[in-house]
Image (cartoon, rainbow over all chains, first blue to last red; front, side, top):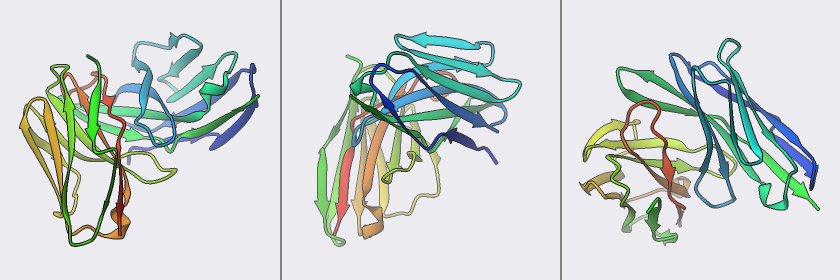
Length: 114
Length: 114
């Protein structure tokens, strides 16, 4: 069964600090992995997308890494801001014959305090 | 225009009511999705439309009836819902259904069934 596990479940940090969120998956065959940011009561917004051949991708203060061998990804947030407070969701897609079957992680709830 | 819009933002309905959720995009995307999200849980895929045809139905109860009248619009018709159907309903679209195409999410409709 395809699964995506995220850790930690929640995280509290001080403004200006860095943090790293983890994502482990068992999706097969692997197609791509995305990190989304979701503010409370809003739709998810894509931060990064990585395919099998990519092992790092940055989007401003967000840097995602992918190790396809160990089936792990991380999202590193640098110099956190209050606006980074949100849920961060890892989504892994299986690709087979052109279909798109996303598996969502349960998310990491990040709170940034001043 | 890189936006997916959803109306209404909030909806309260009784168990005997009939209502519809609407989703619209003008990015030329040919795949559109409905997700259901409960509090503190990841989005759950409900339906996928590809080129205006229903491609995936994730065993959703018949009280939810999707419709894709054209390539820009996606509706979700609701009838005889239960209180446990209260959730955030997210619409998303992507250029194509396959593989690495990014999904763009709308802001969601917050549905409360009384």
